[in-house]
Image (cartoon, rainbow, N blue to C red):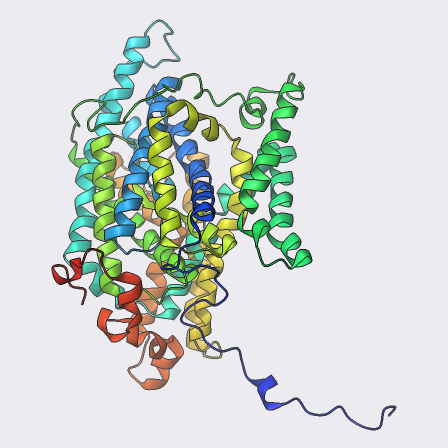
Length: 543
């Protein structure tokens, strides 16, 4: 053999696996280390831009079905923004204290649609049937909104009680790194329908946005190797501005002049219909649509959805803690955060957002893209939300970004959150057949069962559970349509019922790594990351 024999054996350190890290390394600014103020303000504005996608898409879908027009849509967007800013500040100051944005959630949309289709609103004139009934249209919108408010107010009590009573703390202690993997992974990967399928509706805008974001965030920093990190940290701002201008040039240049109405609505930059309808200055206020109305069935359905959102938010909170380079969430802190999220849902009902609140998955992904997990940055973004919700015209300009641009961003952010779940595998024994079964079965069924429920609903117009009680249908169909809920429930159930009480199994599950985080006081870093401000821990101790 040429070269004089066999290659030397690898050194011992080359055979060692990568070290397990309970805090994510290589984060530029962690939860307690804010960037300089100018940079923090720009990063906060970037978070505001990212959360606008869900904030705009949900009212765009719901308001026409509720009987409202552009004016109602603009007011609903303003209200969602205002309440999201308020809830984000409360969560970052008094909840988990993680840099988590608490915004609108797609999880609540099916139940809101069920309220819209309820029989008690069927006698109100539909705006598409009689164009002369503008006052009747507003009356229909307001009545449906008041019904949604009542359901949200009742549903908020679930998370408030479960969180502040400490019940969710006891549930969270059953979580292991193994059972958290499917929950967190599908909190991101399970939102695949809002990525490529949406930006492909206008691929000439969505694809350039995806490519530009990839170049700015991944390739340019690699090529330049600069210590300023300008391009990767502000990749969203650079790419969105460039593609937005490009989309506007296509619009004014007449590229969509002879296209169909769906293409016009998706691709054009002047079809949002909210800039002209938005008031210059307006402060959302409680019960602005009138006194809420209550229906027992709708309240029960919304409570079921609130529980699904609670489970999904648990996965998102874990991802946020990872990308903020904090230690794993102590169960008591998670339970405290759930309680404050319940308060957030209460505010949604009081102000009339038409939608409940949960952790914004896209903003969790932005933490990973920028590698900035600073609490101050997210608090600044909350201030932007409140500011632009009051100055309606200015906020409407940013809210008019075409949906395919936002969907291209989602392809990055949801993928990052999903990968946060996969990183928890480092704590587990992947050579264990027990581990392989729990992971594979829960993730597969977490994708397969919701796919069946969603396809069934799309084809027939109603879910597999179809009785005369619409509220009961929602209580079953909505949970089984949620990928993280199904995967997380199966993983926790199997992990608990299949585990033997021996040290080897505990090690396979990763519990020997997470044991010191099962209580607030067993790790000294908990005080740094999760303690309450203003010395409030004396009055509200974490255990």
